[in-house]
Image (cartoon, rainbow, N blue to C red; front, top):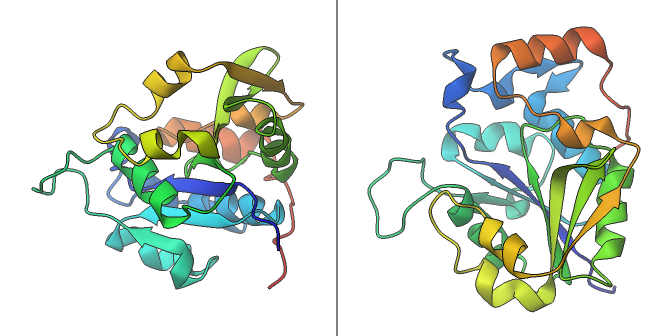
Length: 208
């Protein structure tokens, strides 16, 4: 089977802005958790999916993906040789799928991103080193990186993410009719707004 870009779902952050005892990614949204909804839409794209998460959230991820598709990293704040954060998580996810033809970075707290959006960004990576989804001209997620950036992606660390790569290489905005590319769940108010304003898209997960 021809290799394809992989979706790297980032689910290792502390979610400190949410302000509740339970992590924001395990909050119920529709019939699933926030993370579960994000993963169902990612799986519906039929692209390979890798979840980078902590031990505390690994069981939630295992309800949707196989253990082999989960990369467990230390929680932010854990002492170690590498500074932890979004950059570290991206590097871990990319390193777990080194033979992919690219990687789409999708935060786990963005449960409204449609599978068609993932495929649109995936297609753009055939022509651009960096591509990202945008809605009505506003930049959102996922952000995609082509395989030529592998060596730089696996060297990321800390919490800067991949902003410097996006600034360094030509980045192409993929206009999509998907407001979900701009919607994340940072606070309890964000979650309540989502619950009240719109149903979660009904993308079906890939079989197998």
